[in-house]
Length: 246
Image 1 (cartoon, rainbow, N blue to C red):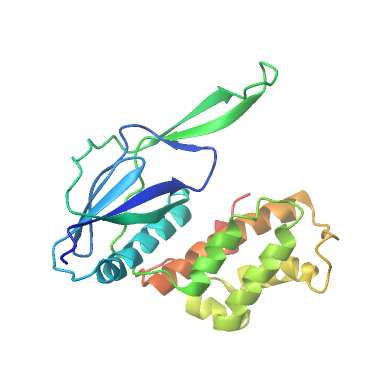
Image 2: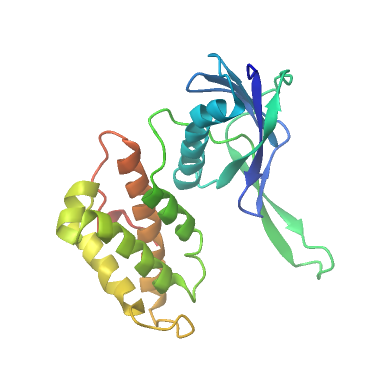
């Protein structure tokens, strides 16, 4: 059987994100021509694949790279979920202008001045052909980084993330060279996150608001840097403590 198309749903990983109805367009991922709207992606292979499994094996690393880049660079967490293979193409949706609009929406059943911040995204974040796959470490760091905003778990999550980086790249001196970051940044991360070592998760670590904000941004930046290095992104600038904003 020759696979003509693969269908995926596009999931927004943040409940406050909404893609505008006109979001989407056409994309080339490897040897697949893809058409996307805010909900669905249809991929049509240029080459012949004898089975659905072979076609998915060729396409899905590109989708994983797209998800990683969207979350770490564009700050739009999203994922692709396989639905099935098809024999016909969907009509191509019209593409929207890039950018995003932030609006306020009232929360049902709440007082009229209670609002929830909804981010309406005018277009899908575009894939980057320089992102070649996502390593197990990079994926683990990306998913852990989603939990960093939880104040009670931030030190423990940061500690687990730093231990994962250290296990592969070594201590601050060695890791700094491999990842293109300053030794001082890694030493500060080690100092702040090490407070979580040997503590039960029910006993949160006491950090100042400034330290907490810095650690949150530092670990988010390190998750991105590891992903960039392991995806083969060229000519990365050195990441220093001065680059971390809070």
